[in-house]
Length: 383
Ligand SMILES: Cc1ncc(COP(=O)(O)O)c(C=O)c1O
Image (cartoon, rainbow, N blue to C red; front, side, top):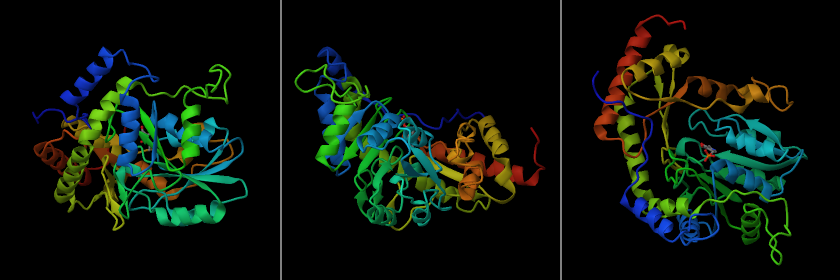
């Protein structure tokens, strides 16, 4: 094939982003302390999430850590976490000395299965972290119900789900704290960056203090607490303000790409496609699929063949319970979450960036169809 290589994601950036960055530069407002873009981005993004407060930080990982620190989660506290996620979600709990409890997934949305939560609550449980994986919202009502009955805080890891809706409500504003990532491949990007969305003004104030070294009120250098430097810069916020103007367009593009893929791939018996439950607006951060039947054990081969045709793909996440670095710590073993283990071994995602064209989607779907028909008709390749 001679068509050009199709990467997993190219960010959608334009003149507005460049204009804002140059403006911030011209003002010398380049740090995380000064400049008009920071408050404008925090307010604009919080409004987009239908949540009263936004606290900008420098990554999704630090957003999660700051959320746990803000809620006072500390050593020995147990936190129920969806096992199938970017490991940043687990790292954040461990940074605080907390004990993550991996929760297995639903096989259709790949999100945490809320029916498994109750049985894992102990006297030490303090919080639940749900992850709106690949842009599909978690079924939040049963999660909030368990949290309410046991007095648990709820953190939404919405790093992949800007603008996703649960029963008409924006994710990030349903639990106590929402955590977003603005990494380059995210729905809205500032290159690197993140945001906390919060309803409670006191929690927002605490997060704002902790993210900036908890400087003192009267004497700046008499610190109020053990703080962090997790500040987003005004330069990054300048990009964020421009991205906010186009975020609905980006979501429309993601949804259009997903609809095209689904139309072209729905008859593939060897593929499980993403769903959109009746309670959800899926924003399809990445169009994630899983291999079924005779193709299930042949993901590496399928991905290699696609790469040879110029189609970049990425494996789905390795569940927390299977991470080698976590074994022997006493809180997980590889077989803890059997459904996530299957998804982790068979899933991968297709090019899904906002700049992807209709003809590129057709090219990817055709390449995948061809690879699958060859894969299934040939013996497995050892490697
Ligand atoms: C679900 C999830 N949580 C957390 C993160 C961490 O965000 P960041 O890379 O901005 O630190 C990511 C992505 O990178 C993610 O996909």
